[in-house]
Length: 284
Image (cartoon, rainbow, N blue to C red; front, side, top):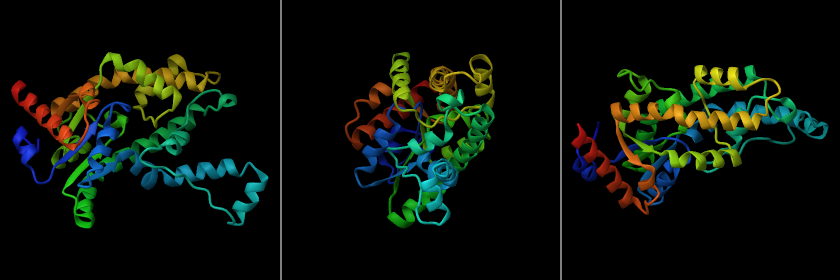
């Protein structure tokens, strides 16, 4: 790790950290707390995916739908209107809408082959966005003079890395430049996360073998897309836990979601991470 002891972290003039874990456990919340101090650069992986790597795909999908309306189609053909997504750190709906959900087309579902194609696009985009982290560390310092840097990852990071491979390109890159920190949830969080997802689906990216197995056992052309997506998300929480744990064990440290929920300011965040480094040292 780039910080071997709690003091290495607390005394560092440049603090660089990557938070990972299931969506909804506080990654963006504490990243925004740090950004709000005016001394941290906040690098959002989902925002980078939705703008730099998936922006054209998202906008083209919007235009396809608009072209189904004669009034809008005429204006688009003549370049009289502009249609584009308004993705932000807090609103990832354009990306979620593009990824969609497989199932019955009459209920808004996508054919599974098309859904799998979009999943592959996201997979590549997520890897590229994660590998861009060192570039943004340098960019934050060079342009904005930010020494401190927080990488706010998507929940699907564990789907695009091999946490047991010491040569994994993404984890090697992240660990060489930042301290990876897992926000660990508990079984008590499952229903809260599932209910939140059902109300406002987040962008989801799955390993093909996981997704194909779920589709084979629960999917089909007549399946309700929302029911399939929610059930798959529920299963993903359980399936991802050991992958996150391996990432923390091999590459970083762990904090508890319950502790994250009590963070009030940047001092709390720094102390929480310092304690996690200390706990790892004691268990080593």
